Length: 256
Image 1 (cartoon, rainbow, N blue to C red):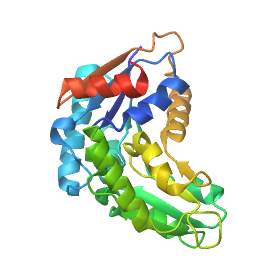
Image 2: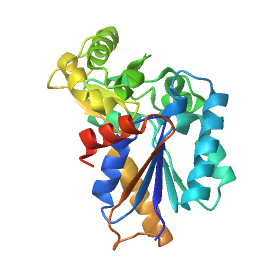
Image 3: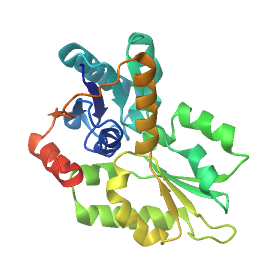
């Protein structure tokens, strides 16, 4: 049975792969980290679209993937619609900051959204926000450098940047006017969750996108009759950057 492709600009998409493997344990996966051309989040759309096109073509041509998960918010926002046009027969699943689920969880109706500058400035997020802004007060925070710090496993920089951006968001808590729900709008950010929690406090809910993406992927494969229930659950790791960094991250966060 053909594998499922998963791609991100770096190691952040491993948070999505973790959820996919839990939901689809018999599926085989090919994970591609485009780390040699990262970061995406602070580049323009043209750059991100070109890199996405190159990566998708490689996964389709070299690995004959039956489905592809774009496990990068920036690449999804910039390129997913174009990829669906260019690969009409391929199951394509993107990710986006979980604004709708956050509304369902929030009681104060004040929600913080962390993301890369590219994601938060995208037309896709503007449309999503415009459709929901009457239901909650969203506070958007572009986190320049945070995904890169996580990519490089730079604990000191991760700690400093999390402190800076969380303090800039405002006050967290369960009282009126306080942020009680935090959307992790980049697939790298779940790997810094404990650093963020230091500033958010125990009562603030944090939402990532791994589980919803895994559910959607399962549903689309089942509908298409492409579910693999007898596979070995193998994972092939590919990177355009440092192999050692990707292997270390997969070992640290996925136990691979």
